[in-house]
Length: 299
Image (cartoon, rainbow, N blue to C red):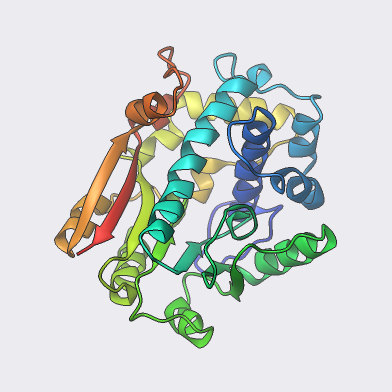
């Protein structure tokens, strides 16, 4: 289903289902011992999307869909991604930051699984249905957050800075922000507004992590469409090309640099090497091969 201006979703539909997809990949990484996320699997199973549950049960193999992309490769790729954003938080707290914000939190369990210093507050922002589901599920699991967790139920297209402030956020203190897997689901002007707001709310010493995909049009290339068609044969009907915004947008590195942030960009190839993984040279990464992971510190 194509996006509309005021669309909404839960974790089994539209953009929300991609959060479940990412969590399912984190399950693979956790099973391989590449990351620590014991909550990913029970959360994915609680959502109950048949395709993801069958994949976790071994009834569907990823290389049935794409022979070059097997379970191990999925686990390594997600480990690289997860470690990047984990590191943003651990480095920030080591530097004394005690405020963290997870934008479009989805099934992110960092408030529970990372070792947060005392008196750290983690704000999770997402659609109301997403926030409610995760909170209820984690409570049923008996999970306790390792920081002060404040769940802020709001659409990022609305006035989320006000909601954040209403929940005790202090813009005079440095903050660690992550926008993981988010930008492609925003129109170009909404991406600009997101970073305008982050910048306005960030005291010196704040940090942010995100990623940069130089060619979003690749989500609609022939290989992507072939994979989407194969997925449909297994009952998986997410059309990524319909969920993202393909319009040309401003470069995040240029934006942050121009607003007083010191930016570090790590290519996907370098990120694999830094994590001790062999970068796939057979085209299995597709357009993700050109992606880079970004982190920045505000001067």
